Image (cartoon, rainbow, N blue to C red):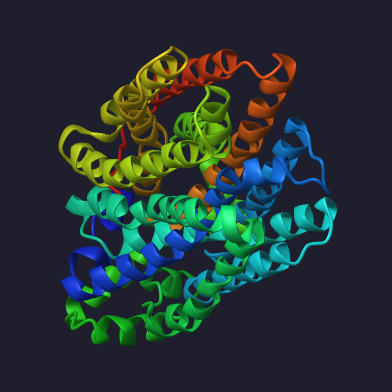
Length: 446
């Protein structure tokens, strides 16, 4: 490429040249897709008490943990598979397909006659869910100005928390009257979103160039009213590849372990694994843990609602703080906030105090993990961005799978005591904070 350096090519990106309407359209569509995923993930925390009391299935805490982890196992597959395919095929088509997959799985779950079929439906849906976040992350970062990436990512990703909030609020009214299956039927509604995603989502400019569709990328840039000279520079930047990363997907994955990326990759993987363990462990078991503390069903689901509401607001606020003070410091402090809040929940407190602590825990886990994902997305160069996030979240799903299992195992091992569960989650949050601080500074602007 005529001597273009990595620094020169990574410095210019299309997000700084598209109109605000394009940025906001992308944010809204990605936010809706992530909201639908948040509903599907949050549904297990909302229905787990109803499943526990189901007189036909008669599930114990460990079996409930396995069912909660089934979708997360599918998400591991989806994040690794679709995150890699997203650098090879149309990202717009893939994100629409992912939403269709997990929406259909919710209908399957609503009709499941046995726990086995229910678990298989969750596993299948998880494949689609695992692909949405890497794709939404790549779209949001690509079509956001560099200076506002963390903020925009927080805005987009608050849809995830709003999805959990919506299922928690719906569960309060629906569960006692119509049962848990109705919540799954409602989870199939986002199937109607897929045509809008395919039709209205802008195709990825970087992805088109990376797949050799330069003329299509040039036409896309013209549609954004980007002048010819800027289009040429953007195409040159997107075309740039070190020689060792040109051949195919294995070389792209191998770039994550290049000397300049290795330490960051390991730190991102470990911190994402712990962060997702906290997110899914707490969101799956929080109503049950609070019920064990003596709260009624409505109050227990209310805690889940507060958890998700504060994580949504925290995603926006945390993104603003990260843009101003730096990702690493903000993320580390936020994990420590989560640790303190979770330890506080293990104590005997007034209802209002517990609501405050649950809100802080929601911010310190869900919001912090989404800012961490945005950090990883912007840390890597555009040529391997989707692969990096897909594999980071894929490995992180190992932690996500362990979250519900850990809660179930600790409850079973301690005869229902919640103290050790809260302490275990708090200790892991402290470890995550330490790991984040080990992520090296980005040598090249992303």
